[in-house]
Image 1 (cartoon, each protein chain N blue to C red):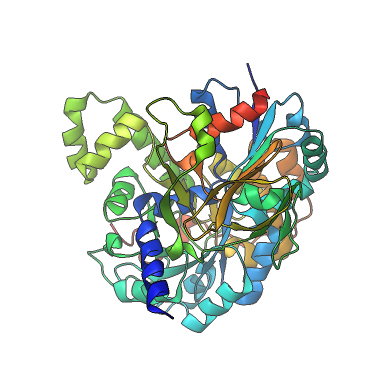
Image 2 (cartoon, rainbow over the protein chains, first blue to last red):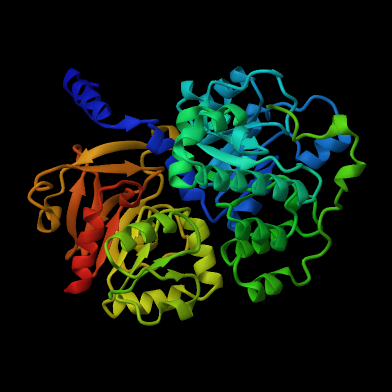
Amino acid sequence: MSHRSKICRREYDMEREKSTWTVKKGLAQMLKGGVIMDVVNADQARIAEEAGAVAVMALERVPADIRSEGGVARMSDPQLILEIMEAVTIPVMAKVRIGHFVEAQVVESLGVDFIDESEVLTPADEEHHIDKHLFKVPFVCGCRNLGEALRRIGEGAAMIRTKGEAGTGNVVEAVRHARAVLGGIKRLQALPPEELMSAAKELGAPYELVKEVAETGRLPVVNFAAGGIATPADAALMMQLGLDGVFVGSGIFKSEDPPRRAKAIVEATTHYDDPAIIAEVSKGLGKPMRGLEISEIPEEELLAPRGW
Amino acid sequence: MRRIGVLALQGSFIEHIATLKRLGVEPPAVKLPKDLVGLDGLIIPGGESTTIGKLATTYKLIEELKRLGEDGLPIWGTCAGMILLAREIEGDSQTRLGLMDIAVERNAFGRQVESFEADLVIPALDGVSSEEEKGKSFRAVFIRAPSVKRVGEGVEVLAALDEGVIVAARQGNLLATAFHPELTEDNRFHRYFLNLVEL
C-alpha cells in the first residue's frame, strides 16, 4: 500500500464514528418486532434464518439441556460461533457468563454482533456484572424489574430483555418480569420530580436514568421478552403486553417440528394483534417442548435470581 | 391529510411512524395487503431484510407492492428497505421487489463493530431545508448497512461517502437510503420524501 493511500484510509476512518451509543442501541432497534432464536450449531442457525429469525443466539447448550444436565455452563466453543457466523447473513449474538469479561473479549474478537451477558450460563462473578461501556460490540442483559434493567443500562447494556425462567417452556416468569418493568415505568411517570431521587434509591438505579424514564415513559433502549416462550401465542402475549420483540430459547429446538414452530412464532410476533392469524399459524404444529411448573423447581436451580 | 403507510412487519417502523406524525402525516401501519388501500406513499423501514422479505411473501404483499411501485406510488426504503427495492442483490437470491435499477451489497461495511455514524453532504436536501438548515450536513447512521454498487440510467445519486460509495439514490417515485434517518431528530429526508408524494 502506498503512503498516499494509507493517509486516505486514515481520513475515512476518522470520519466514521464507530461503536457510538446510537449505533449500539440502533442495532437493537432494527431487531424490533422480530424473533431471536437460540442455536447451538450452524444447522440450527440455518433453520432459524430460513424461518425468518432476525438474529440467532449462539450458546453451548439450550437452557432446557443446561437445566437437565447440570454442570457449569459457559460460552460456546469459538469454532462453533464462527461456523454459525459463516452459515447465516443475519446478526449473530453469543452468550457469556455474568461478570466474565474475558469471555466477552473473546466473543467480541470473533466479530459477533451482540453479546448476551446471561444468567442462563453459570455466573463467573456473583457481585459484579461486566463494564459494558468498555466494549465496541453492544450488549443485551436480562432483568426482573425496572431497577435491574436500569442498573444494566447504567453499565452500558444497549438492549434489555426479561429474564423469565429459561428452559422451562413456561411463560409465567417472563410475564411477571415484563409487568414489573412496565408497571415500574408507569409508577415513575406518576411521581412529581422531587420524589425521583428517593425512587432511584429504592430502585437501586442511576438517578439520571430514573429521571429519563419518568420523562419519556419508556426505557432508553429496546426491551425484548425472554425466558419460557414456547408457542406462537406466548410470543404474541409478550408483544401485546408491550415488549419490543421476543427471544426463544429451548422452545424451538426442543419441540417436535422446529422449522414449522419457528416460522409460526415469527409470524405470530409480527401479527401479535390478530388472533385469527395466531390461530392459523398455531394449527398442527406438533408437540411443544415439555414445560416445567416453576414451583416444582428447587429454588437453587432457578436461573432468574442470578445477577442482581 | 396525506396517508403515508409504513411497512410494519419487523424493524424500525415505530420510529418512522413517530417522525411522520410529527410532520402532520397520517402513518398507517401496513402488515397485510388490505392495509395498502388508499395510501399516498409507503416507507419500508430498516430491519432484517430476510425476515421482512419472508413475511411479505407469506402474507402476499410482494406482488401488490410491486404493482403499486410500478404504478407510481412513492416508496422509500431505508437500509433493509433499500435492499428490498433493489433489482439486484449481490451474491444473493433473497426476496425483493426489484423496483429500482440499482445493485446493492448487503452488510457492505461488515458486521456490527463496523457500524458507524458519518456526516453526509446531501445537496438534494437543500430544497426542503429551512434557512438555518441550508448547507448543514446530515448525520447518517449506518447499521450493518448495505451500499449501492451500481446504478442504472435514470437513477440519481443523492449521497455518497467520501471514497465514492453510494448510500442514497432516487429513481422517479422511488427513494433508497442505506442509512437510517428514522434514528435521528433530523427529519429532512422525511420531508424530502413527502415532497415526492406531493409531485
